[in-house]
Image 1 (cartoon, one colour):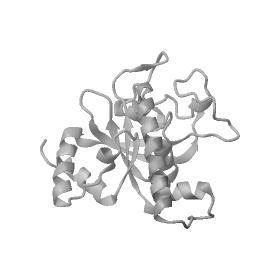
Image 2 (cartoon, one colour):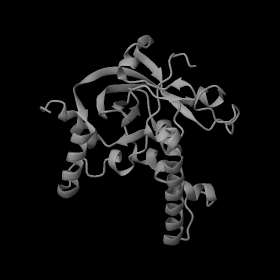
Image 3 (cartoon, one colour):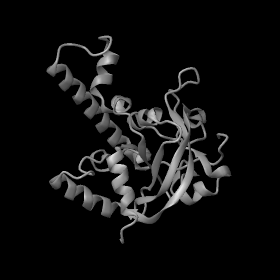
Length: 237
């Protein structure tokens, strides 16, 4: 357990029944790589297979976009994995020392890579996932950049990974701090309605990752997306 104390829960992407989703993600990434190779015979970067994968996989391109806002999912309702309750909503974050906690347990490569792109001071929406009413509950900020996730080495933890070593850790986490609650809860249904409308009109949420890559527990937001969603808290539900 980290210096920040209590572990947070995992979002839908890290649930035990998400193995099929992970296979699909791998297939999608593989298809992207094949498509990229067909379009051009010239390798990107150093010309190695690793460089080609970086060019083809969107998860490796986060730093090019230089995102500065994020959406991070966690579960506010009790759910047990290997006997451990992974519940951790925004109210739990508020009770932590200095209202700060580590964002551990992410076991999706794309979500992990986005966390590795995060910088101290950047803000994220705290999104309640896998619950009766999913949606945005508040705002948090990054207070410590990516470092090895301790849960990957803990055999008693639901997110233990026997293939990861301390010499070459596979998984990372960041520390986040509570900033404030949104002025009102912004439900997924409302965000989805705007997304669908913007797909037709060309509005700011037309390509929002929340709907294009739903299972990702850590997602980037453009400045335009962040500001639009933030503006919704001022409007009546």
